[in-house]
Image 1 (cartoon, helix red, strand yellow):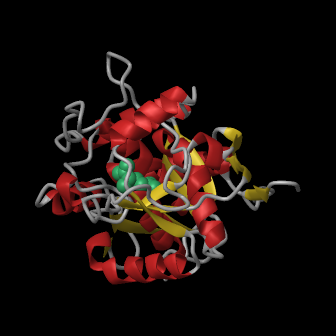
Image 2 (cartoon, rainbow, N blue to C red):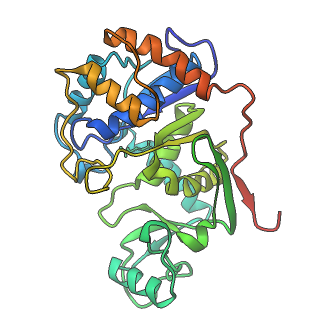
Length: 310
Ligand code: GLU
């Protein structure tokens, strides 16, 4: 337990170390930090370095230094996903023994043309997987990736920012990849295992992950985990209306002017400027404002998963 904890709230910030934090990632970090502090909860830091081709050496250290410079002090020990591969493999084996994981030989191209043939393109142009290899791989082709059988039914949850959400995961997404063709475990599986193992009660993150939430709740349900409460905050867009991201060459947070960087993120969350004269004052003023707007007093949690027929 961190020094600040006196409730059972446990939040987290889970950056991928593909570069330093920029103005967009700071908004997600700020929102999760404020929500944890406003509930006297813990705020954990997890370095999501599972996708090794995207990892930039040293970016984890830079992210930690940026957070410290902004006085965003995390509780407890930092966890790196790369140190948890045995745990992920155990869960993978359990699901496989239960007959819920199967090998898939389909290439991206085949999946894309299948989705178009069936007239199905999911959210964000995502191509649903039609379940081609669910009952065995045709011909003598080797398995490339491993997929998890998604349950029939609509998954619903209430997002604290975006409101009621629902998704027919098996039809809109299809059975999801849990181990990729390059042998790496997929983000969608490991994030659920990590959030469970770290006892996360509340996930606050960027809205780009809203469409991943229903499938993550399905995985949690299959593993017998209670899904956390969710809040997806608005994304910062660049001048061209694209998500500010490392791929779009967003630059690192300006730590020469930490107060200005915090102020920008704060206003991106829709708040009026604060009269803070220092970083410490900024947090002292921001936490109660956040609590007034988002304090969890009467909030109830939806269980997240409603199997077909109920
Ligand atoms: N590692 C993910 C990212 O940086 C965030 C995952 C999450 O918050 O669930 O986009």
